[in-house]
Length: 231
Ligand SMILES: O=C(O)CCC(=O)C(=O)O
Image 1 (cartoon, rainbow, N blue to C red):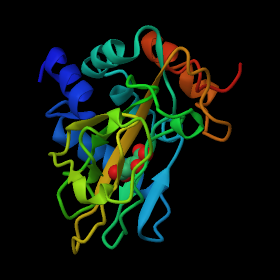
Image 2 (image 1 turned 180 degrees about the vertical axis):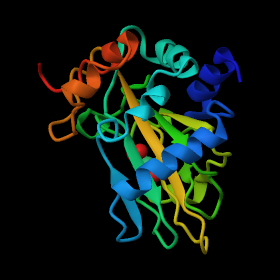
Image 3 (image 1 turned 30 degrees about the vertical axis):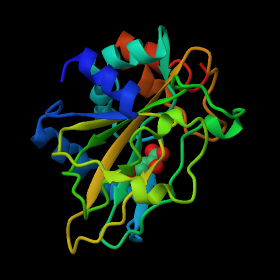
Image 4 (image 1 turned 90 degrees about the horizontal axis):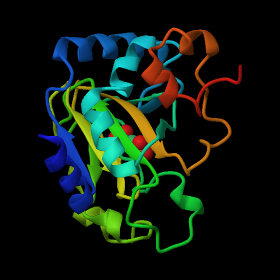
């Protein structure tokens, strides 16, 4: 999908899926690196601040296709709002609650039609209808408000092969689906981008360690300016 088509799809529907951005073998490798670092108590597990233990995730954060789309939707400069969050849906994990993303919870309604946050979810395993694939409500980003009671009826699963990436406008109503598969897990790597005028990610989101940051390429250092430990 070229940039114009992707941007138009996000503006109209609130999301798009780009296929084959990452070699499936590399997706599997990143999934294998993440699992042992995550609490195995079962269910839906997150690892925030994942660039610190897994710097190889950096390749996802400044992928050229994402950079072009983010610049078109957020303007220039834009920044990473987080330090990559792994989102693991193990068999038996329940579905999440539909929501829109930070910072909209604190923003007066109706919310603006343009994104205050752009989300990416890299599929490190296949995302299937029954293994917990992200679900979202197409077009909900223009409602200017949080999900309503009957929103669940309108959600659809975001299906893709490992190595694909789902991109969504932060106002789009979404959640993780339940994992009803007997043995298949779902692993996603989430990197979020903010325009320059959304000044700083919330307190408590883990920052990138200085020694990790300084080893990254210049473009990625610029993107991480608001998510790095103070020097
Ligand atoms: O894990 C998922 O599919 C949902 C992620 C999510 O809700 C979020 O990134 O805000």
